[in-house]
Length: 297
Length: 297
Image 1 (cartoon, rainbow over the protein chains, first blue to last red):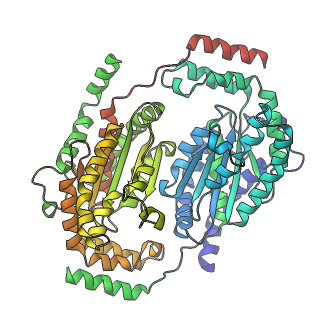
Image 2 (image 1 turned 90 degrees about the vertical axis):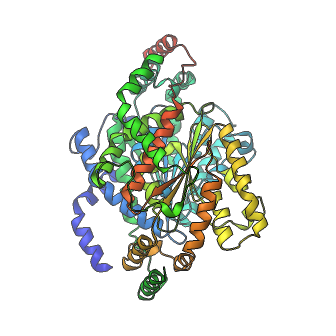
Image 3 (image 1 turned 180 degrees about the vertical axis):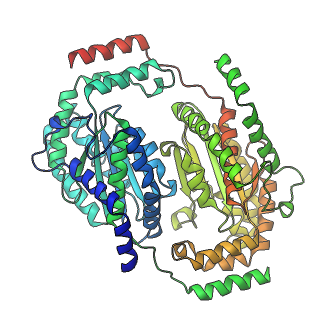
């Protein structure tokens, strides 16, 4: 095992560094200021769209292999939770299709959180989140999440300030307990500019194959842009912890956002350093049993 | 709309015929005899592996497009349910990875049915199945299904004969009601030979990266091969109906099984003849609202 690893780490040296550089560039650390992040930037990408796509393809087999190792260790091994947040049209669906979609669907547990139902509202806000956590071996993916409870809930006054104010520490405690259980959390905010949002909304009302994605209410939300940015700033800084860091991903270029989230996922999978689980049977004995059963048949 | 359709059907004439020919060749119809199906055959495929892969790739964009149309019509439109059955090692997981995995994960609802839990056993056998049916707009996928209740349950005497005997008509009534609700059912049995199974089991006990897929109990099941084939024969013929036909897919060649299931799914998606849902807003008005919101910002 040790031998295999050292060989591997040598071979994969370059992309390994890329993952780490991307994570370092995008992580929310002390002094973070959302208004200083350029949504059109492409941190740590040496090149343009075609280079991003090429680099993503280059490690897609590795993601598949590492995901299968994690899945093979189900029952006892770790899980990953990828939380995806962002303003309307920021490209959450594209991350689901083009990053999550590269992984074996058997190993994915995807949940889209909408406005809470009456039943969900009759429970604490983390109730439906807990119910959607991935089992050991799985990659859980949240399309929106418990962060809506400190974003729209705060901006739209859905609950009194005393309620949303205490949620930040409740979220941190919950995420600490979740990682203690072996669920590794990656949180990404897809960061777009208001101009890019206008462009994407205009496209949705201009193309009959995009109408279904459009909701006139999105324009009303848009009027609250500064309030949402402020709510994000607070959530990002209060809830970016060592165990569950936030990454702000510039997302005016969809291909950059996919490239970045792909590498953040790859990095987390690598960190697990998982081996295939050992046999819980004697391979020699089983080989004979199979051969014997064939002779009978 | 009518114009668009006629143009399309003209352009897609060739592959459309391929889907239909595959369905016709594999469907379980009157006089069907499982023992006469050659698991190594490749019905309606003109060529070898590379041709199958090429034909599958050729229509993968069309599957994605049609699936998105179905998803866009969620709430009011139809759903699809793909039931996948087969002996151990028949390649169910490969279908999940390589056929289901081609589709946007947001539109997939995948359920793997294991031995029923205590709670599930305290309900009628179709209870857990009903709970897993896809919502409007979704592609539901069953990895094993309610058919286990007339396969292993029958072969292993898990319930008295009077119980499993009445299940065939219960299943037919359930599937009729399910299609009445707008869920289109495709049922595929991946058909392998006992020799091919021995080869695949031997691979699993020979490669450390495959150990986790191996269960010594699979060899015990293997001893019951003829009983399983008989149980399949009965289930296939009793439950292949106009509304929910069974397809037996020769699966000794994994690439053929994927090619065939891909085309059966494509065929069902085409049958729906779905258009994008109309706008429930005035595009001109919305374009102005978006532009105005941009000017404010």
